[in-house]
Figure 1 (tube, rainbow, N blue to C red):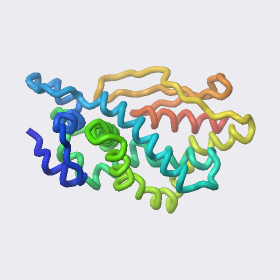
Figure 2: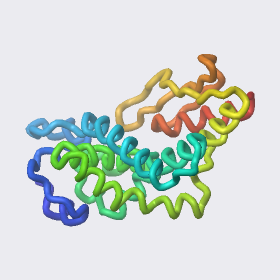
Figure 3: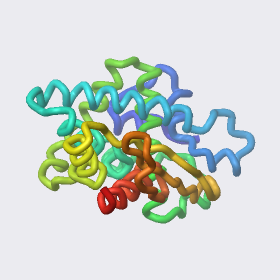
Length: 227
C-alpha cells in the first residue's frame, strides 16, 4: 500500500477523501498485474485535471499579463501545461516514488516515463480539485506550476513550433491552427499518436509522437515548411 502521508507532505495538501489520491497514483498498467486492486486507474482524473490545469493557468496568465494578446498568451500556456514541464514539476514533489506501476512500466524509457509523470500530475490536480474544489486546485497550481514561468521566459521555451505556426497563421490567415488525433496505435505502454494540423479546415501536415503534444509539435514543424 502506498504511503499517502509522504506524498501529502510533499504537495502540502491533505486529502479528506483518500481514494481520490490513491486513484491519481494508480497507472493503468498496475491493474494488469494486481487484479485484487479495487481503485480505478488514473485516466479519468487525468482528463479532469487537464481541463482544470488549463483553466487555472489561463486565468493566471490572463491577469498577470494584461498587455499580452491572445497570440502571446497561448504559447505561454502551452509551455506551462505540456507533459515535459509537468514531468519536471513531478520530480520536485517526488511523485514518481509514489506511483503504482507495473514492473514493465517501472523500467520504461526516459521519454515514456516523462509522459507517465506528466499524466500523473494532471491526475493529481484532478484529485485535488474533486477533494478540495477550485480554490485548493488553484493554490496547488500557483505553488508548483506557475513558478515555472521564470524558466520558460529565460529559456525562451514558449516559442516552440506550435507557437511559431500559430503566430504565422494568425498574421497571414487570421485563424488559429486546429490539431486532431488521426490515429492511436501500439500497446498502452508504447502508444503512438498520429496528429494532423488543420488550417481553415484543410489538413496541412501530420506528426507522430508518444503523446498528443509530441505529435502536435511534429505536425507543427512540418506545417512550418509548407505554408
